[in-house]
Amino acid sequence: MPKDIEKKLIHHITEHSRPLRIMHICGTHERTISKYGLRSILPVEVEVLSGPGCPVCVTPTIDIDFAIAIAKSGAVVASFGDMMRVPGTNGSLFDARSNGADVRMVYSIDDAIELARNEPQKDVVFFGIGFETTAPANAAAVLRGLPKNFSILTSHKLVPPAMEVLIKDINVDAFIAPGHVSTIIGTEPYQPFAQKGFPIVVAGFEARDVLLSIAMIQQQVDNGVSKVENAYPRAVNTQGNITAQKIMKEVFDIVDSEWRGIGIIKGSGIGLKEEFEQWDSAVKYYEIYETVRNAFSESRSKSKIGMPDCMCAEILTARAQPSQCPMFGNHCTPKKPVGPCMVSLEGMCYNWYKYNIRSDKN
Ligand code: SF4
Image 1 (cartoon, helix red, strand yellow):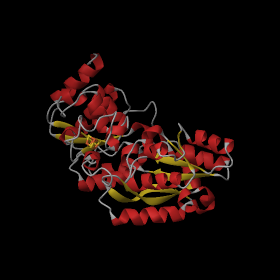
Image 2: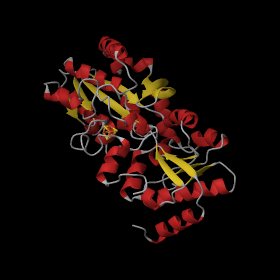
Image 3: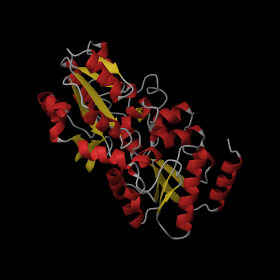
């Protein structure tokens, strides 16, 4: 793989090698790292950990159960394709569709709105997942005005509050900050982590971007400093996308939210403000939600329900690698995924399987 610039970066990283545990929080970074085999060419002391950066993977089972229950009640559930294949307590949205529920695949909230407008006799629910990157499109759609027969099941997550938990629970020295998320939030929200002693570098998605961010982190550590640096200035600035932040504030309140593998993180999610509650699936389908919640809390086991042997929870928090899961590559493959980390194109299991990676050094 190495071209000239990548070769130079690898040489630089190797020359300055020291024990470092660097975590990224981005499914696209994992794809780049796996595709180019970057872990295998880094010095053994430099570990690159995969954090909870795959939006499909971190969506908790209870939200999937809620979407399935809504679909079974007769509404249309419009979802991204990956999300349809993730198992809930009793099967996936895809399974619900096979059993007669009306579940449709969409590529955006606008597709789902068009569906609602074209079929006004049906109630349409859009399953909104993802990080700060995808939420502004939903906020903009709400402000443009939504049809009466439409609502949003909001399961979005915010990255900085999750980092607060990660620095307490995981042995990590530094972060490669997510490029896409940072285009929206800017680099400012990472300052508190730098002040606590964690070097942070925002990275783009080419192999050279990731290698550069590692070299920059090493340099900070060598110089005994921890600060926020931007290695992706072609897309990210300090303040982020002010317009996107403004419309998100207009439409959403910050709420506590559950992450698969981590549990409930304070202030890590968003919910529609009261003035927009007529389009909030959690309000519109409150009774269904209560039924799902009660059933769920009876048999709760930290987001492992429906796939008890799946190690996604451990993988999302860098406590295990895909190849440590006994089902990896045999009972669990992209064609027949058992857990979300093998479903999503941004999942660590999917990428390790696709690029034939069996350990962090091959
Ligand atoms: S290989 Fe499959 S079962 Fe194992 S952790 Fe990954 S997604 Fe879960």
